[in-house]
Length: 134
Image 1 (spheres, helix red, strand yellow):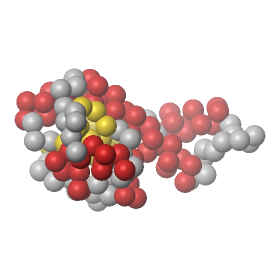
Image 2 (cartoon, rainbow, N blue to C red):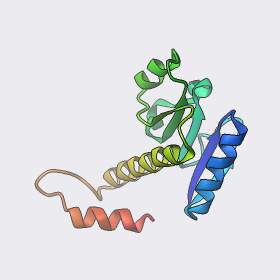
Image 3 (tube, one colour):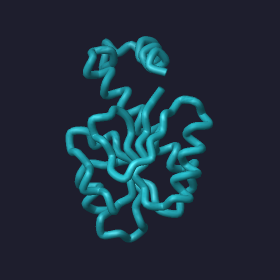
Image 4 (cartoon, rainbow, N blue to C red):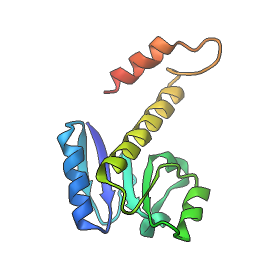
């Protein structure tokens, strides 16, 4: 089961996203004021909390930003690539979470020597490693 921390200031949206994640049966969801970066998994936060982003683990963050926010450039410059906008549906955020999870899985597999690229890359082994983690 994958842990997701929701550190969002919008309670109705947080509730909807939490329910969506719990329904898929693959997630343990923690609604928090401040993320605990010692826990594995994806952290979803609004752009007001962007100072919490830890550079070595930047791929684990999904940030919900206001369109036109001056923080958006800082978030992008910090390396965050999972950004959705305030007003997007919980389903859109769910897709960004899945993308972050896949990136974390890929990073973990490469670091463990299970995946790679180039002439010796084995796509079947890559798929098996992915399914072993589910």
